[in-house]
Amino acid sequence: MPFLSLIIAAAGQGRRLGTGSNKVFLPLGDKPILAHTLAVAEASPLVDEVIVVTRPEDIPLCHQVVTGGPYRKVRQIVTGGRERQDSIAAGLKAVAPAAEWVAVHDGARPFLSPALLERVITAARDTGAAIAALPVKETIKRGNTEDLVTATLERRGLWAVQTPQVFRRDWLAAAYREAEINGWQATDDAALVERAGYPVKLVPGEEVNIKITTPGDLILARAIMAGDS
Image 1 (tube, rainbow, N blue to C red):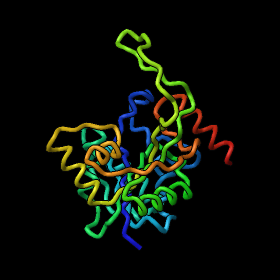
Image 2 (cartoon, rainbow, N blue to C red):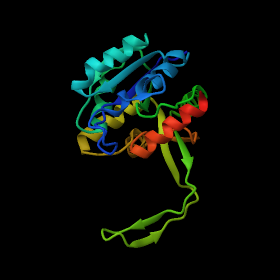
Image 3 (spheres, rainbow, N blue to C red):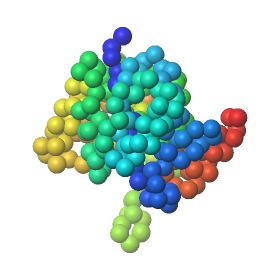
Image 4 (cartoon, helix red, strand yellow):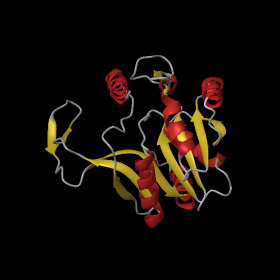
């Protein structure tokens, strides 16, 4: 089976959460937020190694979480950059030479299911790149700098993107090289891969696969955990 490396983005500062610390180390149930994703990766036969990217000041705490598992698939804990894109670039440089596929997942999405991970990986192997996403249900409007509506967008065909995102390693590496050369900036890896000219498959995600960003998200996550227990 082709070698797959999973990069976990865990270098956020948690500004919108208002905790003053890295949100992935906050408790959720009986373990830190980050540990939930590590557990799914550890159990998946499709994941061969894990690279965790975090802030330099959080590396000791990250080591503590990893060894407390223990999560034996974690090969490296890498120092992230100022922006998410910089962090994933650092993680990409750390993946094993044998890796043919690279998956990227947000450390603050603790409810990644084994089934969703498998679906995205399977789709990527068919097309070269695939991402989890949900069709947009709400009406979407575009506003201006004064918060006045300038347009109502056609909802059909719009998707709200999640992670995991899975790519051929050579495609993702090429997209990051072009981004560095051309100064491209994006909020997810798929945008860089798309801009480099590669097709990306949309895979239906899961409503529960939330990203913990705000205090309300944390309340919801803890409610989900309480419902599962």
